[in-house]
Length: 515
Image (cartoon, rainbow, N blue to C red; front, side, top):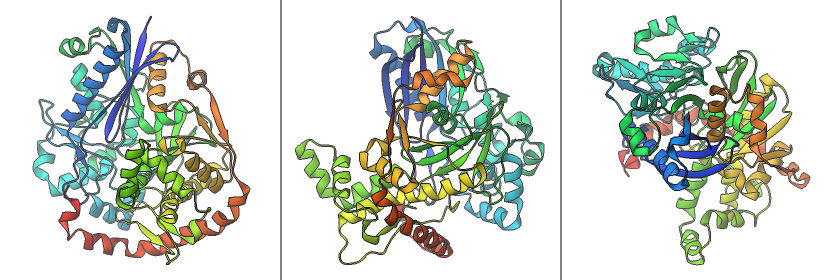
């Protein structure tokens, strides 16, 4: 029997799943690493820690599955978008992996937004005007850290670095290249004007390849540690956004893929480059005839985690004593109050925000709080605020792609009955949740099958997704949400006038960033 490993390099951990060629899962592994946030706006990871996590995860799924490692024929990759690493001429990292969550390029984003250059970059590359983009990170390094910029021989993302460590080949596939802001989305090639603007050379960037491109063979010392053949194929794969969308089967324009994990996103495929006149959405080519349009959102499950830790410490301890999941306890508490949380709104911008605000200075807030509100209202308002924010981004997406034909949802948030009901009620639309919980790894495995000639096109992914569960909206909750959502949206616009002021004030207190 033959096997394929699908692996996803996430923001806080790497997941690996071992599949047979029929899509059956034989083993899973999840290895975490630290996100360094030791300074204001900083969010970095050690690339060697991430490489070691991938090595450990791959080794674990092979050893724990009791399969013959020599029968593993391919390893296929998904990874977080927008990371940036400077390498020297010997391919040693000069920087950590600067992640999508790093906001230190904000002043250059502000400058490019004000002078109109940001819109020009967006129209050429599909990259929104936000410090998440490697384009803006490069501007920051060039101006604020010229000693690093001038020494760099290569610029890569975390997936390209990890694959180079295994194969000694430096390559970058289309979807990841698009997320850098250096790829012209119309020509699907490195953009010479963008490179000239930044002062970098094409030779400093990886070779461009397709997501199904494979590299035959890995370094023997790693093959030995893992217990697989050194002739295994490394399949490039794609971004986590692209593969999460493919992995739930959202292949048609108008079919929305919504994922709420640590962060969140709403996405849809279109056939041609699509520009939002307000630059609220990204547009990244993935493969021929497939452009991914959507909005990435900082404020997903990480906000629920904050509320869990900051507001419900006592309940956390009680749940431990009762041997219950503390997050399930919180959702039960939230269910004790009606939809709309008695007029309490929560803006979930605890770490700045990408879509729909595109404001790294955005900050969170409760609004409407009065003496009659309890922590039960607060936790429900947090959950509703996450979905309201996602709905704002969806309004921007459907404005340019049309009304949704279907909503396919995945991620930990919708594994909760309350989470998926809030989503169905806010959207006033049926929500479908595929059984394929690890949609990114599943799609990575599927791209490997395409690379090996075992599948011909993306449509075949549907037979691997499994059963789908359908959830209907509750009309009794429509009235509250219809009244509250416009207030939520108007308030986000009003508060935006002061986000920069309060963020600048908070930066005067470095103890906020001490761990």
